[in-house]
Image (cartoon, rainbow, N blue to C red):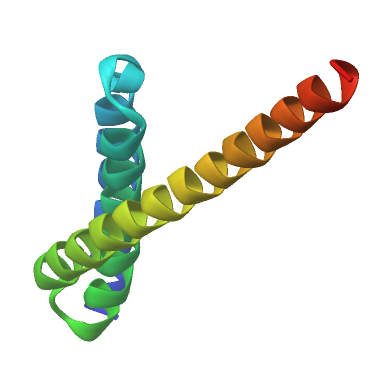
Length: 102
């Protein structure tokens, strides 16, 4: 019962802290922004799960680490997809120039 009360007390604080810290993301790179977002979501989720298990601090720390890793991997995948799209566009553009020039 007390762990549920602690989660109810801690979760709003984590949400507000995450919102305030993400407000400064305008000068961050995509990688930094996605990694920080993953860490914030992971920390909030980890704190909620950890609070139910009796240790919200360790849960938040583990969640932040896992979330940051997930955000970083997500960023790498998005960049790979963007590069593939750009390469496909460039190939199509070059093919169009060759065919249009004949």
